[in-house]
Image 1 (cartoon, rainbow, N blue to C red):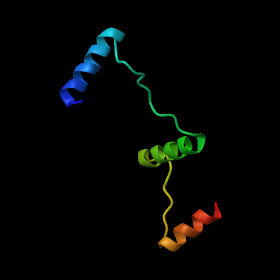
Image 2: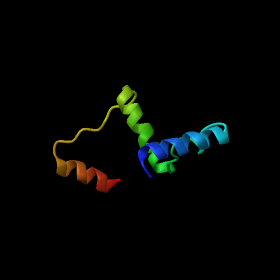
Image 3: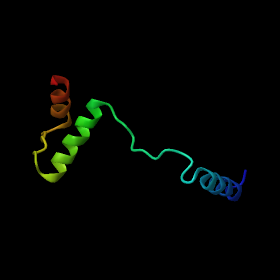
Image 4: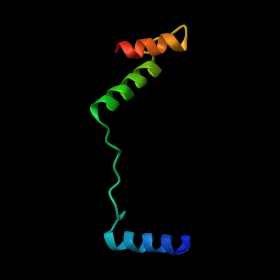
Length: 66
């Protein structure tokens, strides 16, 4: 199927369905991932201060301690 044919199929199906022929949703993440993304947003906005490390070894040690 060529790109043109694929686009035509998509457009025809959209007309038949009266909209997009698939659900448009945001991806769902597990609770741990959601918490990490929220923490990243708070760090970027300045609500919380990001941890700093003197070396990669110190960072890895902190991760192991969690």
